[in-house]
Length: 197
Image (tube, rainbow, N blue to C red; front, side, top):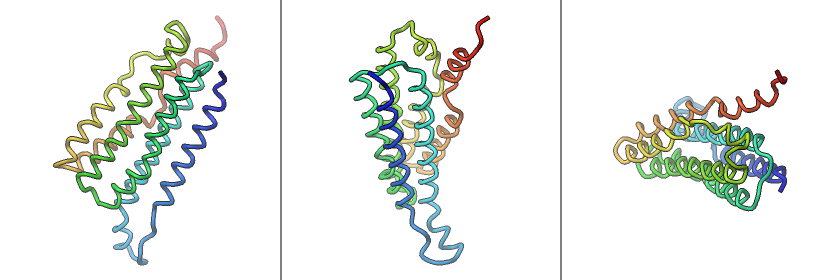
């Protein structure tokens, strides 16, 4: 089964997610810096969420470029990932509107944790499809960021009940960790493009 429709559909859904998020932003009610400060929490939630969605798009692009084919299980695993990503605008809007209240901060953390788990499931399904001796499998070396990120999300979710701003910092920390694309697939592409010895 060709992967082109899966990647095109995923790109479209992610573009819609970003569009919905920006439409949730409302300009200040007055023309003053004080009014601008009032919408700072919404802008923080939007910016962090945009970065997260961009990270997922970037890494999804790299991962799908490394695979040769997809099957029904991959299609459903990909839809599972898109489902959780599609909740990002809701979680971001609530977080920004409630100015760091504990429950929206917890829910935002869950909205970050679940796509991470879904991405791992998609990666596992692709590995099963391509086999342990495939170039895709060889690219999947140790994954420090992928292992530690869910742990930081869970720590942030727990911290959010008492220290929401600590949770915000932890969520932002994971985003900073992932700003560089997944280097495992970058190395695979370099090996594929390298001239033969």
